[in-house]
Image (cartoon, rainbow, N blue to C red):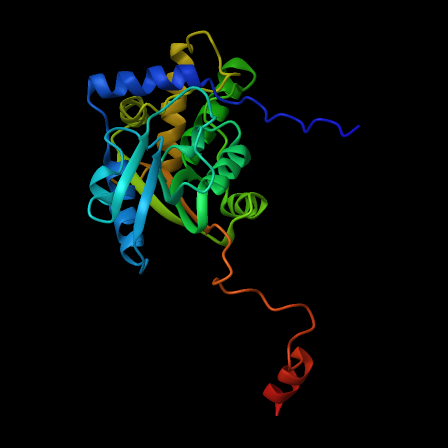
Length: 280
C-alpha cells in the first residue's frame, strides 16, 4: 500500500492574515510595493507576444490586477483571499494566471502551483510575484538580537521567505516548462523601526506565523530592537533601511511548440575541443 504523502506544514494563520488585510483596508493600505509589482506585471505581459482569452488573478490584495489585464484578456476571474488554499479551478480552463504579492503567505506553495498548472491550457502562462529572499532581513536580525539580549531567547517574528533557487525548483516540480525566476530588490528608508512596522501593519503584513508569540512584547525589548536597528542599518542621515525582495516567477504549461532541451549526448562538438581551440 502506497503511503499518503506528508502534508505541508502549517506555518501561517490564514484566518488572522485575512483579518489583518481587512484592517489594512479600513485604516488606509500602504500600497507602494503592490503598485510597483503591478507596473512591473504590466511591462512583463507587454513583452509576451500573444493574446489571452481567459485569466485568473489569484489572491492579489486590494483591487487586484484588473487595470493591468484590461484590454489584454477577454475574461478575468478575480479570486479573492480565502483561508483555504484549494482554488477550485477547472482543469485546462485558463491561458493566463497572475498573482501579485500573495504567495509568500501560502502554507502549501507546491500544492498551489500544482493546482495552477492543472488549470492552465497547454501553452498557458503563470506570471506571479511574491516577497522572498532577504525581505525584512534587517528587522529579523534586530528583533533576534534584542530578544536574545533582553529576554534570553528569540521568538518567531518575521516569516521565512523562499529564495530564487527554491521557487525555481518548485515550478519544475509542479510541471511547468521554461521556468524563470528573478528578483527586484527594493530598499525603503524610514525614520525609525517603528515607522517601518506601521507600514507593515498598513500592508496587512505583520506577524501571522502560527508559532508567533501570543503575549505583548516587553517595552524594553522593543526599544532595544529599534536601537539595534539604528546602530546596524542606518544611513549617515540617521534613516534606516528596509529590504523588500520582490521575487518574480513564470512558467508555461507544456506544449509541443515550446523549445525542448537537447538530449544528453546530442552535442556535435565537445567542450574539450572548444577549450583547446580557445588556447590556440
